[in-house]
Length: 186
Image (cartoon, rainbow, N blue to C red; front, side, top):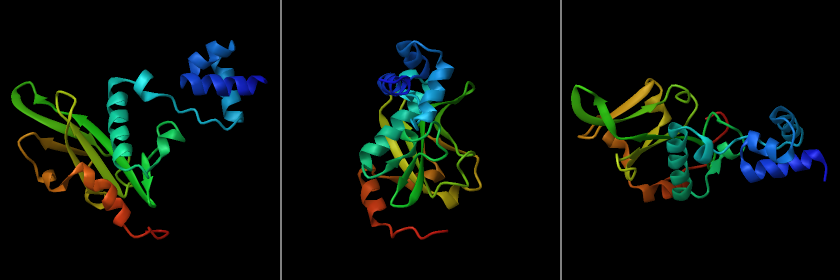
């Protein structure tokens, strides 16, 4: 087996560049070059090696994928893809947040989502709200046009104008299946 294939096999096993390099016995930089030359996407594994924020994002993305099984996951193709999914030609970015205190002086808890990197790109945003216990509290489906003027969205636990976009999780797949094919440039 050649070194390039060894690097690919080790990376697919570990989903971590440094661990793959140790497995093959060469520097991680060389492993990276072999992976790129082989066309192997270097994407990492946010669940095992990511920060708490990365793991929360991966949890929300996995939930979306389970609810919309036909969604094409762009994170499997590229590390930190600009948009998470494509569903029937529509771009979807999934945002996840855990219920937290607004600030130390206030006892009000809220979910917060940063939209600034994808606000101009996504056709739809799916915001996954997890409770403090880590369980799903609610899911929102927001058209990209609505989010375009917001860098962040914040929802109070007690209710918010954003609650108009709360949907039943089981309705996501039928919704996307009901959409007409997206025409080029739309």
